[in-house]
Length: 430
Image (cartoon, rainbow, N blue to C red; front, side, top):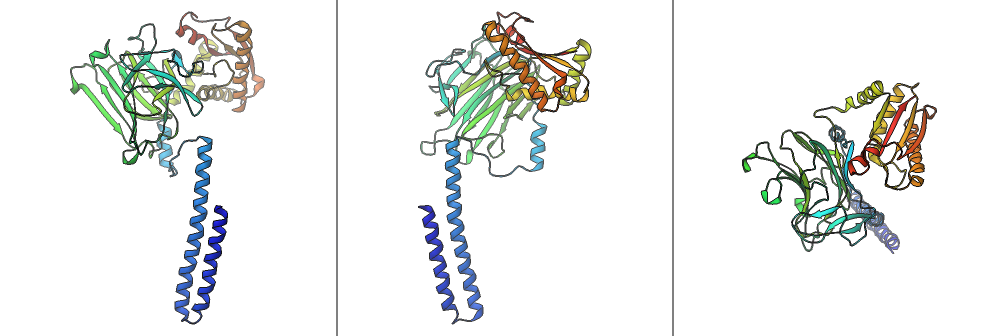
């Protein structure tokens, strides 16, 4: 139908142009040129408007069908790219203390790895093909189920999670708000928490984040420090209608907060937290979270990424092997997670710098599941690592994949922390 309208519009406009020319022959040459130019511009504008309207409509439907998020329309400048790359310094901790990808959860049930702090409710839901923990009432607080529920954060840790962000309902004026809070006291009644909030609203308020952090030596509100960032969509940090990745890195006194891999806040001095929760306020459809990972360790305070490679060289020089828990796989599969590529790149850089070095690449699992499953799985994972290194230019002749299953644990498989240490990849120099 639109195509027919375009043809008809072009025909009518062209006919008008022809008739106009017959009339203009009786006018002066100067008037003729002026009218012809004006008419030609109208024809061109009419056709372009119709074509652009069709193209926008087609692109919009295509994006909606694919379920992709809205991207900011402006291209990033080189300065913006350089600035964001400089802030992309997040490194996950090496020991996983808590992890919930929601894979085995049943839709409609309360997520099995979470607990209510003082009010509210959760249930497993699905959006854009991904399971997540959805808040089902307003003003909820939930925290991971831990053996020691109020004292489990180490002095160096990282926390990651995903949230789905979509536009505000322009008719009801509903808005979304998710708060990540880190806590210092033994009870929520102590009011001794620091918070990082992420808001998204329609109209001129846009999407924003703010923090309210306690400084060491709490003695009242005066010992809080605050920060705020506005319009995160326009700053190309947040994607609407899409899943977004959030992360926190804490080291003894310093905290960094990231959105989609880019550092948003850098807080140099705050009180060390002991536990955390997610808090939700406001009436919003997709309020919730998934893919939560709490890990012990991270980048040393003020350590630069240029020193990462020396850590690999040092480990191999001192022990003849490099052991890592940062090469991660999909649950029950040999599919590498994207965040594993940074660690694999470190090994690739070492091997490209030392082309005669040869390694046995060992895959290790915890004891969850039978040997019949874990033995071939660990072999497949070792092979996946070798393939990834080969794709980065490493000679596969210098690599031999070996699956060790759960037969060589380095920690107690009775605890989640121990199992996390046992899920590892070792590069043994030969």
